[in-house]
Each structure stands twice: as structure tokens, then as C-alpha cells.
Image (tube, rainbow, N blue to C red):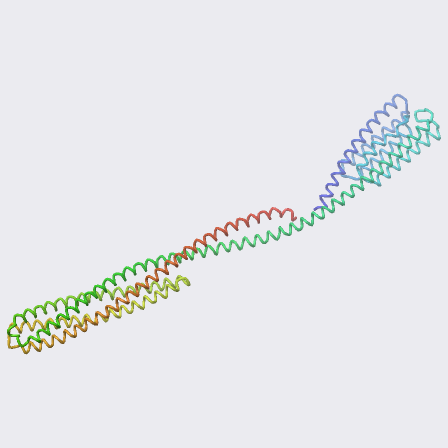
Length: 502
């Protein structure tokens, strides 16, 4: 492509020089035609010679124009013009009546310098020198006078020959020096062009590498941005799941607080039952000690048995309330177990971040199972307690009835008091057992509360980490988007340089 551009430039230069040279020659030829027509008409020169001269001038002009318009960049035109004008110049020298006709060659020779063809200039100069030599021999030697008819003057002859020779030498040297200067400039231009080509080649290689790397980097940034988006969405899902876990933990905390309140109520009731059992034992002991004076204190016994009956009623009622509480505790422990299972499932979905939460959830499930076991034991004890209370109530009723019916049944009453004493002892033992188990349930519930607190703390930490990770993910996505924009801009800039790579 560079060679085509260079040839195009050269052709354009030749076309411009051809046009300029043709214009100058046409002007000179027109002047010559006008002059020789006038000379022929006035009789200063033979009309035949003037006609031949004008005809040749017109023929050379027509031929030159034909060659030019057929191909304006033709190198043949300069040779056609040189031959045509050489003949005109020879006819002017040999047939003119003017002593200074030889200067006609000077403007044409100057125009021909523009071709920068040293061989062409030398050949033209030799032809001009030969014609002027013939001119000098013809007029100065053979005819012995000037073309105008004046006598030969040595100074004029020397001036004529010196002017032609010096001018031709000057034209040749000017052409040679110009060509040398142009050659040196061309070499310098070629060196600079080679250097520029090498530099441009390196730049284009770097540009191609940058373009390739920027495209690869843009693709990697796009993939990184997609991965960051996936990570951000996963973290959002973890955050949502963790929020759900937090709500479940909050509900479980409320239920464990209710369990704790119920357990405290049951503990207070068991303590009241222990007090009632102790009072019953003391009352029975008093009845046994006062058996000998039972007859005198039958009314007191009747009152005491009524107090015992009322206590049994209260004991039965309390036992019933404890049964209801244990049922509620059992229901709550079942819900706690279900919540622990749900928490394990949610932690499994959370993956690595929910592993600690899964361990705590398992601990909650174990504690819930222990709570259910203890609640079942309490239920059994309460059932037995109700049975004992019912039995004690029946015995006390029998004692009251026996006291009213027969005073002689003191012995039977004493046996009954012994039975009452034994059953109250059992009842007291059962109440003590219930109190101990309630304390264990309370301790287990406290551990559940502590575990839930730990789960809540872990959940809050997971939520905070998830929120921070989401923020970092969004920041990373923003940064990768900015980096992608920069890489796209760099890629577009490198694309602009592709037109230099052709």
C-alpha cells in the first residue's frame, strides 16, 4: 500500500510538471508563431521557411497535447516536447535573422529541470550545445557575419558561446545537485520512515496485545461480576434465612419464658403441698398422741378431721393444677423439639455459616427431650398424688363418719390414723420427689434459656456477617462494573488504532 501511495504521488508530480512545461512551451511557441508569421508577411524571411516553421511548431504542439491528454502522467511527453522544441530551436538558430535567438532555449531548459532527470538534461544540453556549435560555425566561420548581417565581433561570439556553455553547465549541475539533495532527503525520509515503521509496528504490537489482554480482562471482570452477583444473592438468602431463624428463636424464647413461669408456679405449689403434707403429718401425730383422750376431745378430733378433709381437698385441687401444668409443659416441650428440628433444617440450608447454629439446635432438642421425660415423670407422680389424695380424702371422710357414728370405733380410727399417717408420709415423699424434679426441670429450662441466648447471639453475629458480606459484595460488584467500563473504554481506544494495522 505504501508503494501504491508513492507511485500515486510520483504520478501526480509528473502530471503537474507536464502541465506546467506544456503551458510554458505553448506560450513560447505562440510567440514564435506570431513572430515568424509577421516576419514572413513583411518579407524579412522567406515565406516558405516561415510556413514550414509555423507548421512544425503547430504540429509539435498538437502532438504534445495529444500525448498529455491521453496520459497526463506520461513520461513520454518530456521527450516529445524535447524533440519538437529541439527542431524548432534548430530552425530558429539556422534560419533566424536575430543575433540573440539562441536564448530561446534558456526558459525551456529551466522548465525541464523540474523533471529532475539528469540523463535527460545532459542529453538536452548536448543537443543544444551541438546546435549552437553549428550556429557559430555557420555564421561566424563560414559566412563571416552575424545572423542580422552585422560584422562578427569576438566579444559577441565569446559571450554567445560562454552564455550557452555556462547556462548548460549550470542546468546540469543544478539538476545533479538537486537530485543529490533530493536523494539525501529521500534517504533521510526513508530512514525516518523505517524508524517510524518500526516504532509504529511496536506500537501496533503493543496495541494488539493490549486489545487482546483488555478483551480477556473485560471477560474475566464480567465473569467476576456475575460471580459477585451470585454470591450477593446467596448472602441475601442466608440473611433472609437467618432472619427467619431469629424470629423462630424469639418465639421459642417467649415459650421458654412461659415454661419457666409455669415451672416456678409448680415449684411454689409443690412447696405449698410439702407444707400441707407436713401439717397433715403433725396433725396425725397429734391425733395418735391424743388417742387416749379421744373421747374427751371428740369434738376436737372432729374439727381436726374436717381440717384434714379440707387440706385433702386443697391437695387434690393442687394436684389437679399440677397435672394441667405438666400437660402444658409437655406440649411446650413438643413444640420446642419441633422448633429445634426446624432450626437444624435452616442451619443445614445455611451451610458452613450455620454449623454452630446446628449444634446449639441439637442441644435444644436434647433438652426438650429431657423436659418431656421429666414432664412424664411429673405426670405419673401427680397422678399417683391425686390417687393418694383421693384415698386420703376417703379415709378422712370415713374417720369423720366413724367419729360421728361411734365413739367405740376409736381403735378403728387409730388404725385409720395409722393408715393416714403412712399415706401422708408417702404423700410427703411424693411431694418431695415432685419438688426435686421440678427443680431439675427448672434447671433444664434455665439451660435451654442460656442455649437460646447463645443461639440468638450466634444468629445476630451471622446476620451481621451476612449484612457485611452483602455490603462487600455490592461494593465488589460496583468496583468490577467500574473496572469493566474502564476496560471497555481501553478496548475501544485500541480498536481506534486498528486502522493503522492494515
